[in-house]
Structure formats: structure tokens, C-alpha cells
Image 1: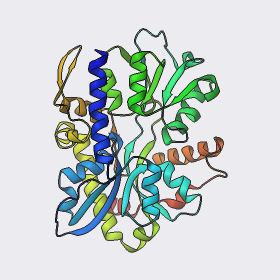
Image 2 (image 1 turned 90 degrees about the vertical axis):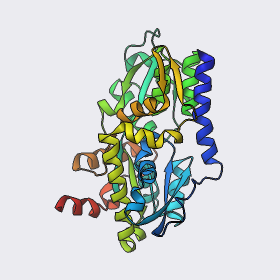
Image 3 (image 1 turned 180 degrees about the horizontal axis):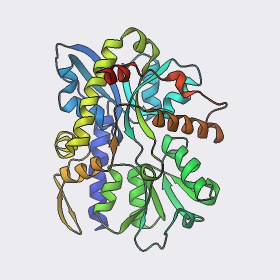
Image 4 (image 1 turned 30 degrees about the vertical axis):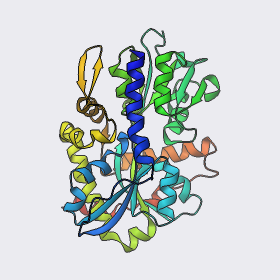
Length: 337
């Protein structure tokens, strides 16, 4: 079973690495629409960008879109700042960090509410976050949006700090392998790695941050210049991704049919409960998420709360007003209709 699981993870990683080879996805063809470049990361959080491409929604909006794949939010935000992208889907903390240093950036729409689970082995005896004290936790890059919320909310609410836990900062694939092999006691994961771990059995969910503390993890970001001077294109990108969000929320199976190839080369997986197709796995991963093309006041408040946590954790030197980088004029127009 462990060998099978390793093969599953390697199949997922190979898809991501193949796409990352040139840091670019194939262009959408020789379209006749206005050419745009949209950055994304190959995680389920960024599914709105992928579905908008694979369902033809960008083309429907008169855009000849090229999706450009990045392996980190830092590289993606740099590309927006340098004018190499028209927009990107990535963590709100990236916009906050760079804007606090003077970068001209705007958050123009929502994408996905944070989904990050903590999984433990079924026989671990760990029943609460408090039980993680003194244990080994495989988690994501220090300073990432997930890491900031993990430390500022999850651990704080349990009366813990990062010093109470042996943190191992690794890729999600390595985190899952380490959990299965018993090298760590718990793993902090996003999709589809959470789902791939679960289908192999032997693990259970201890905590899911989206259920306990919902916050907009992924948002749509563009440059201030594009927001001011290329508004029609920005709005068309948002229109296309809004259609994608509707499909993800209302017909996850159809959305999975479109984007499964982006996450795995396997057609099916053998699990303790029988055979599952790859599309079924990705459908479940989509269903675990909440996608939202807009940002309401409560969600904006949560982004501000995360920005405040960034100050507490010395990621930012001083408080930052999130409202200063919001441009929700597309959303306001949608609400009038």
C-alpha cells in the first residue's frame, strides 16, 4: 500500500513538474481576441483560473488568454509587479507584503476561501490541536498565508506557539509521504494532497481551518496600472473566472472532467474502499473547497485580520490597511445588475 501511495504522489508531482519546466502553460492557441497573460499555481485553490481556460470562458469574453504557471506566489507576484502578467490568482498575503513595500498592486476579486486540513494517522492518539504539543508537524513554507493563519489562529486558539511543535517545512507531497511513513505525527495540507492522503486510508482529519476560521486565501490580483488603464481586460478576466466559480460550485464533476489532467496522469486509484477514478478524486477535492468570485465585508475583514497577524509575526514591519489595495469596481457593477 505504501508503494502504491508513493506512485500516486509521484504521478501528481510529475504533472506539476512537467508544467513547471518552462514556467508556462501552452498558450490557448492562435485566438483572435485580446492577448492576456494570467498567472496561477498548480493547486486546487487556483482552479478558477484553470477552469476558465479549459472551459473556454476566457475566449467567450473575447480574450486570447495564456495561463502562465509558477511554482511560488513570490515569483508570480514579481511577474505582476514587473508587468509580465495582466493578472494572477494567488494568496492575498502576497499582495499585502509587496504593497507594504511600495508595489502598485490591486486586489480586484475573490477566488477561493482557505481550505487547509491537519491530518493525523488513525492510531496516533492525537485528538485535539492541544495534543500536537511536542509532536512533529509537516507544514508549508514559513511565512505563507497558510503558515501565518496556522500560527496566528490555529495554534494560538489552542494555547500553543510554533515553539511548542516540531515544525518540518516541506512540500505537500513530502508532507503526505512523511505522515504515511510515520516520520511526522501530523501534516498540514491543501488539495488535492489532502484528498490523495485520505483515499489511501489510515488517516483522519483533526482540523480544517476553513470550517473553523473562514478567510479568503486566494484572490485575483493585478497591477494598479492595469486596474486604472486596462479596466476592460481586467473585467473580462473576472467575468470568465466568475463563470468558472459557478461551475466549480454547482457542477464539480464537470469541472473535474476539465481539469483533472492538470493534477495527475493516473486514470484511477485503488483504495481500501475500491477503485476510484482520478476524476472522482478531483471532484471530491473541488467539493471540499468554497470558491467565491467576490469579496464581502466580512471577508475583507478577514484579510485585514491576516494582515494584522503578519505584523504580529514580524512578516510586516508595521500595520497595513488592506482597503488601500482593494479595487472592487467589477464586483460593484455586478451587484447593480
